[in-house]
Length: 143
Ligand code: HEM
Image (cartoon, rainbow, N blue to C red):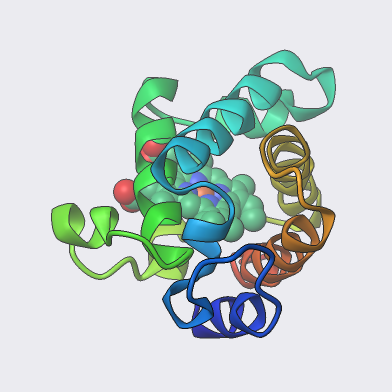
């Protein structure tokens, strides 16, 4: 997501070389991305309002959490962990086996909003990432 990187570059919040900054680094790198994936699935498992989304998951949640972490790492401008393991993300195609309507999208985004609130302290960074990921989530709808 180059435009996320660009937005963060225009508004450096710390004293590093802005040209070296990207979303991944600005929010705390690997540790933060892992934590976002963890909080995302914790919220999904704990919330009564997200049980339908949880039930849609075929395998162990740890595996889904790991894949989300690997994807987000590359998507936010860090190491392309998902791509290295599984090839091109082709995210929409990978989601075709699952019935994703507005309700599922919104349950997914509820979990992501929670995870970002827990792990990304800077409100502006959080908002930019949320908006970008909400667009991506809407793109996953297949009904
Ligand atoms: C919009 C609603 C969405 C729903 C209901 C949904 C649901 C699911 C389900 C049920 C799986 C299978 C779990 C697994 O293989 O472990 C999955 C896989 C995955 N999802 Fe989503 N997802 C949504 C959006 C997104 C978005 C926006 C992203 C990226 C930010 C994403 C990233 C992934 C990744 C990386 C995988 C693993 C794909 C694979 O290896 O085949 N998902 N999703």
